[in-house]
Length: 109
Length: 111
Image (tube, rainbow over all chains, first blue to last red; front, side, top):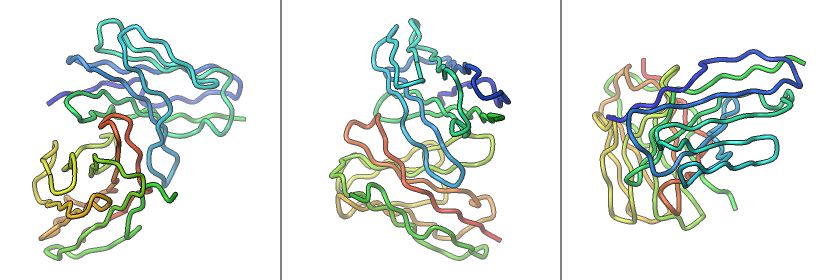
């Protein structure tokens, strides 16, 4: 089946730093999505991207749909303690999502 | 609106026991999904439904059954639980099949 490689697996940063993470696939996706999961809760949708090359922002978050349709990137600017959590990318095709393994983000005050 | 709710929140089963997880959504979504989440493996799709009365297999369907008798409910059943089914189970629903909204999860332990 389709697989997504998400990197890095974990990040330890200082408050105020910028963060970048990415997701790559051997398959083409029609839509890319980024979710955040807080401990003990379900994932929450952050950003959805529908078009190759699209760049979309949501507050301090910016995500891009790769031009090849096989990758996506998420940037978080000026991180704050509440950014802590697991970030998942997901590629969508044929009505289903395929998820990456997640990036665990830790922010030190 | 409650969004997506799941019951129960926690459950411990013995090997061979059966149980049903209930997912309910009040957003009138057509699409509903069941995932399992294991450490380091992200979320994997078990079964899904594209509308009332329909079900389809996902990536890891073995050992599970589902039913969608009402549009707002999606049930996940384990007929004979195995330790390999110890996991956190998430239900999700969606209008478009892509922007999915998740419930809070059910943590299942099979001993």
